[in-house]
Amino acid sequence: MVVGAQWGDEGKGKVVDYLSASFDLIARYQGGHNAGHTVLWNGKKFVLQLVPSGILRPGKTALIGPGVVFDPAAFLSEVDALAQAGIDVSGRLFVSNRAQLIFPFHRQLDRASENARAGAKIGTTSRGIGPSYEDKMARRGMRVGELLDAQSFRRKLDDLIREKNALSEALYAQPLDVSGLADSYVAMADRIRPFVADTAAMLWRAADEGRALLFEGAQGTMLDIDHGTYPYVTSSNATSGGAATGLGFPPTRITAVVGVTKAYTTRVGNGPFPSEMPELEAGEVRNRGVEFGAVTGRPRRCGWLDLFMLRYATRLNGISSLVVTKLDVFDTQREIQVAVGYRYRGSPLGEMPAEAEILAQVEPEYRTLPGWCTPTSSIARYDELPQAARDYLRFVADDLGVEIGMISTGPERDATIIAPSTQLASWLR
Image (cartoon, rainbow, N blue to C red; front, side, top):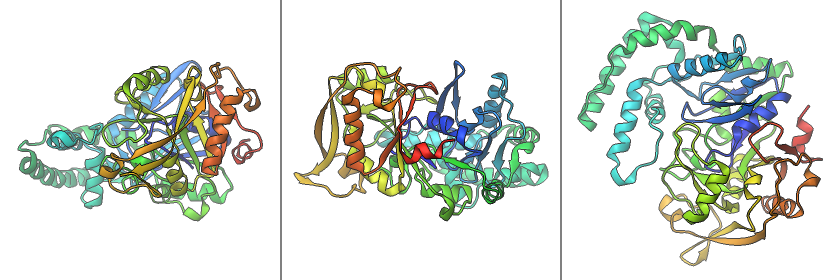
């Protein structure tokens, strides 16, 4: 399993794409098309939002699990873009019949809810993700499998629209725009039908046959609905526990968790960010790291690596091996700050605060490490990295008590270093 150890945007897309060469099935377990996994392959840039990035590997099977909220139009657009790039997904891309549907009125409600927050905006992408999950938990949502029976689908959708329209008018004084909605979804159903399957059963069979499975999440640990910086979070469980429910796969059969972190930290949207850099330094890192949202284009907030947060993510996810991405962004940095602890009202904290208000007031304690001031993007072996870069990685690994199995020094597949004699190296074939 691959999880984000920070606030998302850690580079999971590239990591999953790279690891997929050694696995047979790649499955996505939560989130929606608010996630953007960017992969560079054969000189082309792919931004995948719903489809697991393993689909770019010939012969691999990709699954979208029941824990994902599914926008049919976004999915078909992505499938068409892959076809135009020469990537045939026929017979190797499937979506769960239990995945929740996103409708255009979910996006309308998403925007209305965010606008109503005034000065307390969360920073949602307004893709309808949260409202779709709300309907799921309220047991009034609709699922992909229901889309395949046109008559029943229309009847259920009419009932849902009546309820959602009453809600929108009562809360936001605006009716929903649902003109042509049922017809458009029924039209898309015929195209989606070949992709629909019981993906949980597919995973069970594959595991019984001894095939290698790779699970991927979206967003990151600190955006998890239960364990992140609530309420500035996503609407699903982005942590490793979400894979069991989001795929219908037994947790006892998950053998390893790979956590992904940048060599620094970024965050999109509002919410506390203890290790955030002053804008002058953040702007330099943002430009060097091209820190702009793959889906929204929004500039990301940038900060120093936060080991207090990563300790929390390591324990919470049960991380077995760590991947450090964008090490090359620090190639021109003379000194590097690392947050090693938090203080709140003068006293050191031992645990991650549950309240966003407290986290917003903590003062990070920093350790200063020397930079290496030499390019790393062309280096292919761990022992060829500058000594200061290896010292930086060793400092992180020792603090967390977890191996660093992979280092990424650029967006391309070959800008990847596998650390020798690690668990991660042994999993690759």
